[in-house]
Image 1 (cartoon, rainbow, N blue to C red):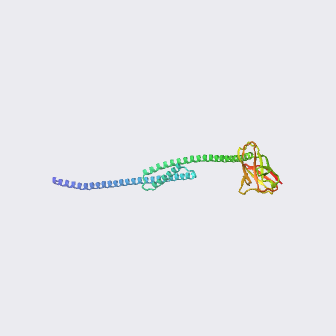
Image 2: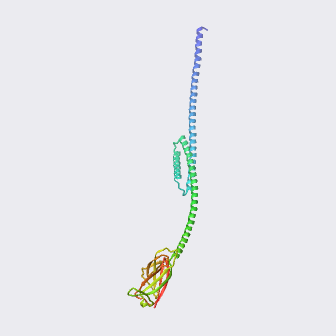
Image 3: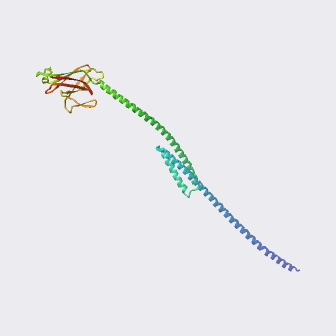
Length: 317
């Protein structure tokens, strides 16, 4: 074999080897590309899976937290309603203001939790507000309990005071009745009484001289002589004396407008005079005129200080 033939044979061999080597290199490149592409796709899928899974878990967690907060708010509101129900007629401006603030916080929390755009930071703030709300309701409960205790004490004190007032009223009424009774007794005891009384028929001459007369046709006046008994309970001074004169037929002399009271009863009087009572046993004289006296007994009654002072009569022939 010649050198030329060897060269040609070697060239052919190298060429064939080259032809076998080139396709193998291209296949490996393609395999690497597909592996990289698949790896990238897997990595992307894993990324999005993890991301969506994390978002889903976070959304689920927030939903649970919102539900827990809603339940807690419902529980607080129910407790607040119970406190308001127990409050009944207890009125206190501070407790009323606390209740209104709690109601406002509950309403704001419900609006926040109903908002779909709420984020985790909002949940955290809402939870803090719920904690403060629980503290406010607890303070409200304690304040209401303290106020009810004070009211019960006041009601008991008022009840005791009312009983004391009622008892005092009864005692005052009894004292008033006793005082009135005593006053009546004092008034009765202090009333003037005559120690001596005498009624005379009087004939008055043209000169003004007066003579005692028993014949009716000659009598011009009735003379009433009386003295007042000493009375330490009676006050000295002017005393009004009412006189009632009754004729032999039992008729009272007097005007219908001449009225006075004796123990609350209206009586008609014939005439009245004022005497100066000095509590020294003075004697007094009243004169009463009539155009014509008739035969029979005339009765004279004297009254003062709402009581009878004395009475006497005279018989004219």
